[in-house]
Image 1 (tube, rainbow, N blue to C red):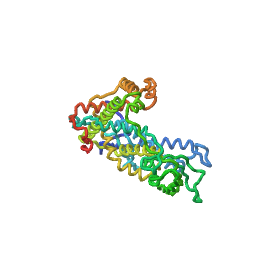
Image 2: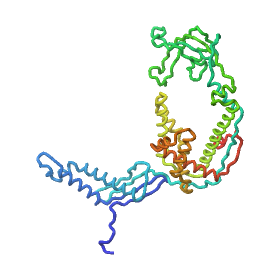
Image 3: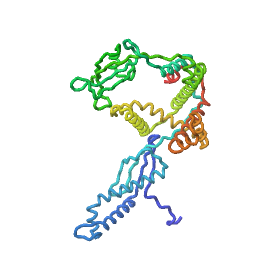
Length: 446
């Protein structure tokens, strides 16, 4: 091979090291000639554009320009060279980092090459193993008569009425009252009076002071109720304050439950008899229990899969997962009027680590199983799922399909289908043991 045909050595060389399965350190060496050329080009441009009193534009001596802006140009040249080298390092080593690179061990002396390291975190390469024969307990689905009776009881409660009684109030009674906060002079503030307020004595949503004061009251009585609001109350004007409410009791009413008969069944189930309603309830409860059992089996499978495989997670993946949880908590706080708290955020980040690690390890392992077993979902599969959901919920298929295709819902649906098929594959090869309906399978796993 002639000299002209000899491959020219690249001015930028990169090698990669893997201190951790989720970490890459790209070691970079840059010929000094490349830096010198970059700096010279920048200096040349600076000379052409430089303007200094006593000199025409572009006529300032090179040495003077270099004295004034040389440090800035050297910094810019260095930054540009590092940027170019990092791009080459990514391409040559086929890296897909999940964090921004950290520059370390930078060395550039008066002579010789520029050398430095770029450290990043990457998505760990995970290969799931030993996923055949996972032991899974499957609870029997048994609907007890007491379960059906509990649902019927809630239906009765939902149609309860209240009838006026001439006696003192008891737990569960409905009290109708007018109430007004105390004004500055100690008298009720008529401008803020709330008329015909209805409260259930002992109700969970009531302030404790009201539950205590409304025990044993009768129509026509007056009550003075003092309420001290907590320091963390969402209403700024009430935080830590004590407000006295002047209450006039207008009526006490006792709860009346409807008879559990065919008439009630017809009202709540489109003309069905009580026996038919009970059958429907039993079937619905069985479906819900089947879903719960299926979820329990998935959780057992995931725990066993994680337990059988070692996965090292990048710290940034865990932090990102937890931060998304904090953002969701802030969103709920905004909806409910609760203030955000740095202490609560820190507690969530710490307490949530085990769950985050389990979820992320499970996600990576399930992906590995899918890749190894060729588990896929097609567009036709998604369309079938769209039609199935539309039928289940009574949606118009075309409109629901349009909704799914309009945003991220289609991607979520595809992911859910992939995950379901992966669990189904693992369960098809699991060692499933039937157990009684009252077995605490997840508690046993813990």
